[in-house]
Length: 233
Length: 385
Image (cartoon, rainbow over the protein chains, first blue to last red):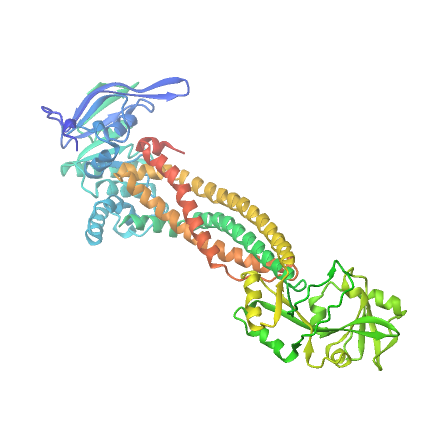
């Protein structure tokens, strides 16, 4: 990676400095993120709370290197990730960032096991090792007996677990979760939150976007987002 | 898990989609193959028909004299052929190197005699061969089958006041007129045509022939080469290729070929468009999926590998099925389109070309949308659709 992208004297795992994101919607310019400054430390479980349209999902995608901000910069372990080329950012995501998408985003034609193995397909790991890693995380999320099923044969809660397993299979230091309980009933949502909390207890840094105050109870810190600004840190 | 597992699982588990894609390719390629096979068979058929239309090589004894005739008018002079070929040597024609290009070989004996106080030219032929060769001849009555039967030129029949069924004595032998030629506008109008062996006897030329007309199929050989080879076998003969007949034949075939190439270009264009639109639509639909791959950390090259491998497999299967299907359609449709034409068989060149075309088209058609989608920020791609 570019050495010029590494910033000295930064202590936080993630540091967000003055980022903004504008969208062009026809003739009008929409500010999804007006101005945000925040930090996240290693091992934290942070929730980003806000109404829908507040800019919280955009913030998460910018944090994950998935969405180029219009202004400002994101430092990940002192590395300005948007100074990297898009291919370098892809490598960074592969190694450092696991993403749990809103509405799961599983690949419909791959089995549960294959979906979980997906991030490993580009790592050069041997088939046997891949298989062990994927089965281990599937056991972790309690889906060992459904490894050969296709996603549409699973319940919402089970699909969410597959999405979590896929996000953590490569053991990335940072886990981003976009409304992980959004499509689930309260009992399943609670189970998922417990699972995330457990992962955090084992040292996993998690940043979770939610509009559900209940979900925030499980996290160590909540960042509130409103109208494209984060005003409580 | 390797990238190709993703491609193959997609093809395997989304059968409906795969069938739809292959069907698009199948229709495009099959149309190209069928139309090209049909036009090719039609071209062959036209060539064959033209080849069967009359003779295009004439073999006569070498003579020092110049013929004193032009356009059917003979200017006095004496031009008696003194040299003839031995009939038994005629089969040697078929021993030349390009013998497979030879069609009918029609020997004839010619000679003048006097019938009812009038000079008349007799032509002895092998009727079976002659009638095949001159398939444009039209006549009243039935063509002769026996050695004592005659076919008269229209002018001869008028001159001798003969009708079908009448008897005509030649050199003390009685012949029955079984048929009369309708006017042809050529030399046949004024002659008497009879059996080769019967006329050899009358003309005192037993075992001899005066000239041989030869039909050559010249689709893949130049007529001059055939003329040369026959000339080598018969040094005493003057062998002439009827260039004019050949040229008009070639022109007709060329015209048809140009026409069929025109159709081919049009069909390839339309077929390609169909394949292109089908593949492009299919990859466009996968923008969101490409976004997931990219978000997980796949490089642009990884995504392209997955998409292009799939396109290649679809192209291969669609192209192969299209080729087989198109050939099948040509085989089934050909007898309906051209009555006498038969399917020219599998054309392996066309097979290779259609496979390459199908693969190239699906690759090119997938390349653009896949590249476009993989260039998007993953979050943008995920919002697509």
